[in-house]
Image 1: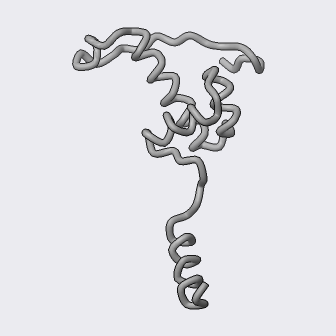
Image 2: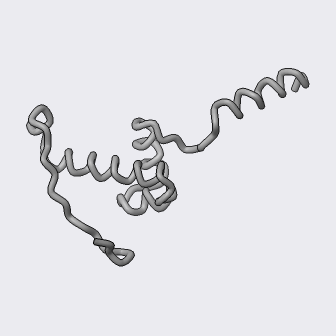
Image 3: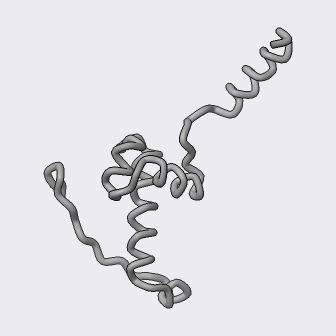
Length: 92
């Protein structure tokens, strides 16, 4: 089912027993964060849109998402390494 923009959906999730002792509100917040992080990785959400959908500032979202491997800037590591090598060769 696809909802119109601005609508929310509730889902029911079976939580593994090893996590079930955590407070439900904490699990819900973490699940929402990880779902939104996945949406950013897949290109369905921008970082600012993700922060807004969670009711967070962009800075707070970037800090939280960074803990899950989604960083503020998408930069290919190989490309970054090549650029550093170029800078070193040129003596900048």
